[in-house]
Image 1 (cartoon, rainbow, N blue to C red):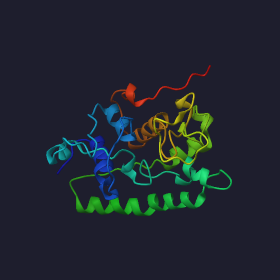
Image 2: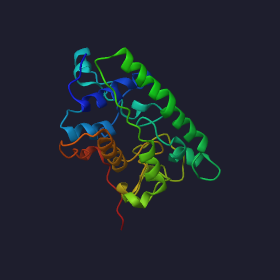
Image 3: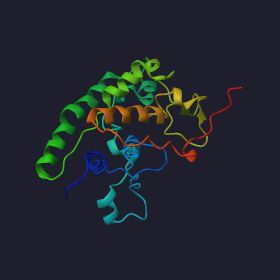
Image 4: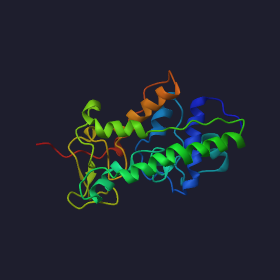
Length: 228
């Protein structure tokens, strides 16, 4: 199979390549990094992995979206896992857990790059690009004010003092302004952080042109509590 554009290669490689994680698919309509990159190029968003209407033909033509599962525990294809809120709250100091960060870097520098080398050998008519977001998120976390964030160590959506929580639920408490948070919940970057990651990857890979990303749908954004 020969792909037509570099951007399609990035999206399909990141989404289809995630099958090794055995993840169950996108369970929300928030934007992933791949969604934002695809929007910028005017590409249709691929369906969720567990979409009941999926067929083999659709998968071959458009790929599938594994959402946060696309990178397994290393969301967005590698990031400082020791600095996500879940890891911080489990530590005795509230700081990043460097052991987890070293594991993430080991995955990026060794396992993931070897996997891409092997795939390019096995599939000579395809090309792949590795969307390494580690340094982007690491800079967001350690220099949040530079990017307009006020909070880089706790989630916008949580169960208040009951932490760590499994994920964001209807019973959760929301922050006043989600755009000021690097993390949406205990594990995942916020929509604002995902957009920053996507823009950096677009620049890194030299993808020019396209149109502005499509904003997250209203139903994907829970209302913020009143600041009164």
